Length: 160
Image: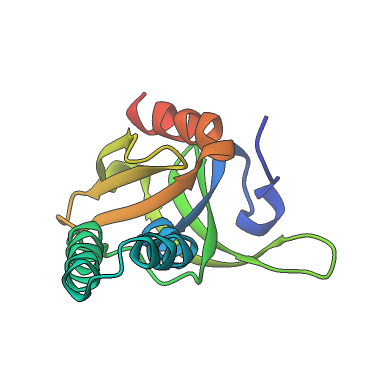
C-alpha cells in the first residue's frame, strides 16, 4: 500500500511510492528546534568561551550535514517519488487546507537510467534515499521515519 495514489497524476500504474523531503531539511529542522536547548545550555554555563565553542560546533555540524549536494530537481519542501514499470517519477506535493495532495510532475527518468538506489539510516527521525543515475547525477532525498517502509518498497522496486 502506498501513501498516495499517483497513478492519475503520472498516467500509468504505480508499483511503489513514498513521500520525500528535500536534502538537508531534517538538519535545518533540527537546528531550529535545538536552538532553544543551546541557549539553555549556555545559560547554565555562563562563560563567553562556552558560547563561542557551542556556536562554532553547531556551525561545523551544519556544514557537515549539508556537505553532500543533491542534483535532484527542485520540488519544494515535500515531494513524492513513484516507481512505475518503466519510469521513476518525482512529483511535487502541495499543501491543501485539510491535507496535502499531489501536484505536478517535476521529473521523469527511465528506470533503465537508474544506476543504483539505496536507503541509509542517517538519523533517528530521517533516512537518506540516494538514487544515482547513469549520467552520474545523485538525487539525495530525505525520508521521514513514518515513510520508511514505503521508501524501502521504492528501493526494492528499483533494485529488482
